[in-house]
Image (cartoon, rainbow, N blue to C red; front, side):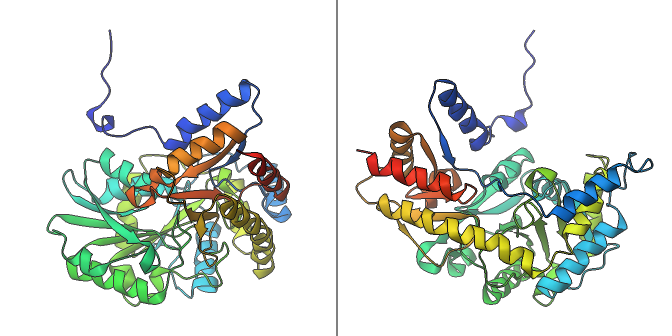
Length: 386
């Protein structure tokens, strides 16, 4: 007997990097020394104090049971203090913050909480593929809106206003932007909040990159009245080197947070308490931590720019975040073709931008999550590529 899968997955493909990892694993098994400059999984460890806190707390006999669905008070307060210190945003830790098992989980929870089948969801192009995938899983009507290179990878608001917004209930934005590395600005955030308010659209800003190679982290929630129409997701994966720990959060007004909690409380049973204590410790790290992390990424970024130059790609030197994004030369059919050529001839994988939408078809993305020695080896191989 063959059990048919649910219809909801018929239009959803396996995540690109999941499929690609199998391809790279097969190459390694065949003897190829693969250099993966693709996915942005930080290779640096968390601070020593964080690991020590986890170890110390885990030895306690009374911390191994189920945990609160809203996280321990120390963690929620840690997030609130973090937002106050770095973003200048005041959040009530009791009801305006919801800890998550990574912000990726939050994308699903938010759409399950607010989107009915047939509702419209605006997603950026280029943008994180999970926005579109989850929208399809919940039965939404996905409506892409373009980000333009000539506008600093911001939307054209005149173009947005001309869309049929009658059934649109939610808009995903992602600043600082991934994959382009474009920074946010207060002016942009004001436009987005105004757009959401006038059209009664829930704005969801995904904000995990604001500490990586950006001068000053900013939050969409710092705009007056933003909590009335906006949710912000944030993450400890990038800024704190805790991707595998799975710590994120959602912040908004108490009514919105309570709706997300109604979904989340039926999906998991909390995170191991010692990990929550360690995360709270991480949120108290000072400027010197972020400066040190950024020194490492800034050095790596120089080599990533060199790789782009070798490939004839044009990359904006002002971009930030965990990646370098560059436009491929005109003589190449597509970024996918160039990426495949590089992989075939050198064993180096560089992400083709088409996976982020049609606006990324002429771009490559290089991750900064490889040591300088690895990047130098990639440069050596590329010099020999014919």
